[in-house]
Image 1 (tube, rainbow, N blue to C red):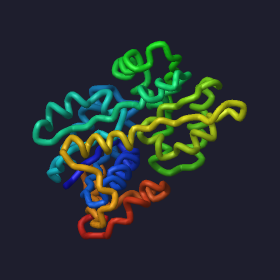
Image 2 (cartoon, rainbow, N blue to C red):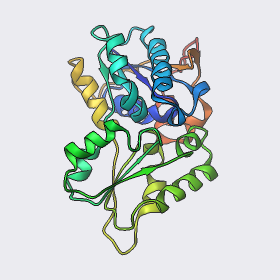
Image 3 (cartoon, helix red, strand yellow):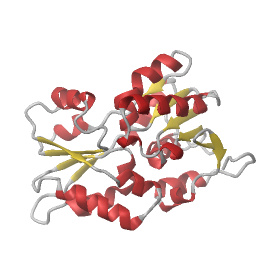
Image 4 (cartoon, one colour):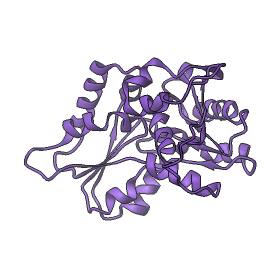
Amino acid sequence: MKIALMDVGIGLLAAAAAVRRLRPDADLVLSSDPDGMPWGARTPEDITVRALAVAEAAAAHRPDALIVACNTASVHALPALRAHLEPDVPVIGTVPAIKPAAASGGPVAIWATPATVSSPYQRGLIGKFADGVRVTEVPCPGLSNAVQYADEAAVALAVAAAAERTPNDVRAVVLGCTHELVAEHIRVAVQRPDLPPLVLHGSAGAVAAHALRRIGVLPAPEASAEGVLTVILSGREAALPAAALAYDEGRLLQTVSATPGGRL
């Protein structure tokens, strides 16, 4: 069993770690585009072109499924990716967790890249799942890039700036894929001491479980075998970026035994 994941950067670590927890024996292919960062500032057409290239690099390893572990790519490129790869490779998009966040009644904030905020796709999800709930879309310029390089100072600045744009009474925050890696930083920045605990909603666990269902595989977290990890950076096989090891998810993936050819 082999699951591929794609994203512009190391934001895919959250979903990859979720797959690893559900199926430690699954081989993983992580395909990203650090040469093209950030996608959030690009046009939808450019995002689609780059996403197709990243997906093709992953598909060359013949995975059983491809997870598009990126809200921005899912918003702008998912139809093109499915048209290009399916039915040979099932493509699983990442949907912002607006539905469970809105179920609490709100108010809700959605943190996302500038390319995703106010996109027709995200607005459609808000209209479908959060009708009657006060929702604030919060652009987070610079946050994904700061997370990519594990730049703690830049992460702190970007989180603080997004927190300033988040209403004080928000009770739930929907996180972008990359944002899940710094979820606790976001919680601390947004939580108000006079209000109940803030609830953060990510997509990694749900998309990992859905990918397994698509290929007819049950979770087996007790599996003792370790799957192989293959890392592709802008089309080149490489080691897991050093910055990935700044996060729990990256360290979990690094536990896979080292093998030749850029595989950890």
